Length: 360
Image (cartoon, rainbow, N blue to C red; front, top):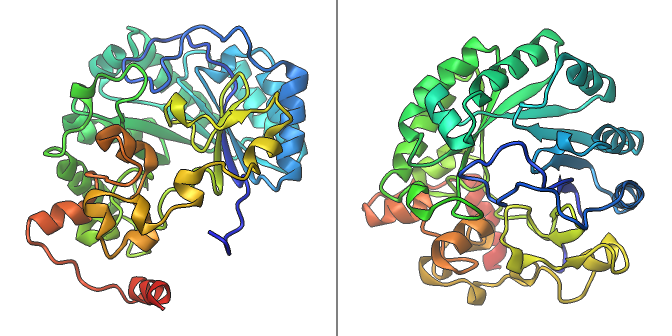
């Protein structure tokens, strides 16, 4: 990492822990607002500090971010600082007035969560009206001409509904669909997490959808694929450069705790912005070691001996940690799965050139 500049290029910010749902797959077990959430002044100062550190994009998340009364003020400050503003919502608090506010603020993109057909989505969200409110939100966004996408967390519960979800999104005029794999963090029961047996089914389905992306664009989550035949195909043959948590990505919790990625469990908290500011946490010498000091020796299992390790560095940290308890021993890697099946991926010239640089 000595020649790689670490700066918080992209930040995902949980502005509040408050939520109007109790989703069974919630990675943070959100519910009530924390008693020590950042004040408006602290939040605005944080945005200004992130600007000074070169931040290019901030995603406002939660909980449900719209339950924080000053979310508009925070989003305005992000935009005033020349930073791209994004927001993720479950749609339940979205009204025509809110959509007009979103348009005025100028969000780069608005993520709306949809996790299944009506009965499945409502079950996951633990709210019988959730599905209809999501569809209503997409309709409002479409009518106002705002850029938005659907976000689906795939698990064993909804894996077999992906075709139906896609059609629902097409009917709702949704232009893009981000597909992610749920990890067993927060309230998510481990038995519901996508099994290794079902994982290739998800990969095949995404590849099928990508071949018809004129209808709806497919955005593949960072915890899916990596290398191998199908893993590389997901990224159009482009190299995968691994987890950027703590190097170019940061996650900030509503009380000011800082992690490399918001999806990481609490034992990955590096510090709090109230103890001298974000920069002090970000720039501490021994911070974010799992990525900033990553070497082949810190990897374990099949990852340690993998030829692609210099590039992918074990893939998604959260996925590997949740599955194996280790930073880089990641069973959710298509290359590992294909190797076990005796499948040899074709050589990719661009990838080979990059790997040769590491060998030299």
